[in-house]
Image 1 (tube, protein in one colour):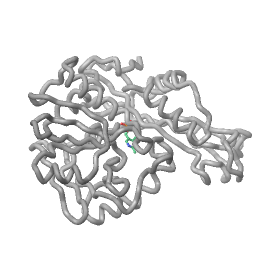
Image 2 (cartoon, rainbow, N blue to C red; image 1 turned 90 degrees about the vertical axis):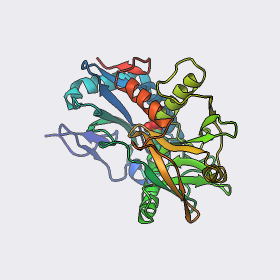
Image 3 (cartoon, rainbow, N blue to C red; image 1 turned 180 degrees about the vertical axis):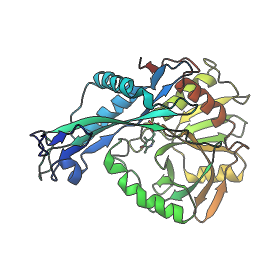
Length: 338
Ligand SMILES: *Cc1c(COP(=O)(O)O)cnc(C)c1O
């Protein structure tokens, strides 16, 4: 009989998958916890790949460092994730759009009431089969331009995937839902800078006066979570713009890609002048989430989307990125599991 009392590491794991922790484990009191999210895909030939897991390991180590949890060898954990996926591969549904969501997690397990770097921690990985985010075509979301609350602040923890970042957003999202919006558009500072869309990175497409299309996302200034999807969209858009790797279906004409601050004043003005081409969020779960309406200071800004819910830029980028993730388009970002 296995004892349910945690050992000196602060936890006991059981054969049924549960873990026993001391009630004083530091994760419970001081939010010494963090997580990651990535996906494994099965292609048409049954080959299984992960998408850019090195990026997640790098970010997980950065998160760990920020809350004084131990850092670790990211390559070694990628190897362990591969072994886990090989064991669990029958859980990846064999249908278009399905994948295995992988959730590496780290928690401080030391039984202690003092606030200090925990002497014990647990890194574990759980998986869950997930279906297509948009089962019946894209459904654009309405955002509530949130100025009453902040998600992140300079010198804070917004750039890290720490557990402490997420609980405070739940009630704020519920308030937005009560007003008829799906998600929060987190605005920061007196000039209402665009930061993130719920738990996704924000992208805006402006038509400049000379007709050039500009794809913009806020810079990694310490308040923005460095999304893997954000980085991938930027890289693909830049390679298209430079002619290095054209993306099928992108609009003709000049395109520029920039990381710069954007205020709601600029977004509103562009919307009024008919130059707001697109607004979308990026993240592992939905990949790209188009926005068709933003509630801001008592009025609604409307953003055009096509009949399929997508825009002229997000549609071809989404297709290309999902093509890479699902193995239809070969790319160095795909890491073979077996
Ligand atoms: C996870 C997350 C993202 C998206 O990151 P991906 O690596 O693209 O999944 C964006 N913003 C926040 C706040 C997040 O937690």
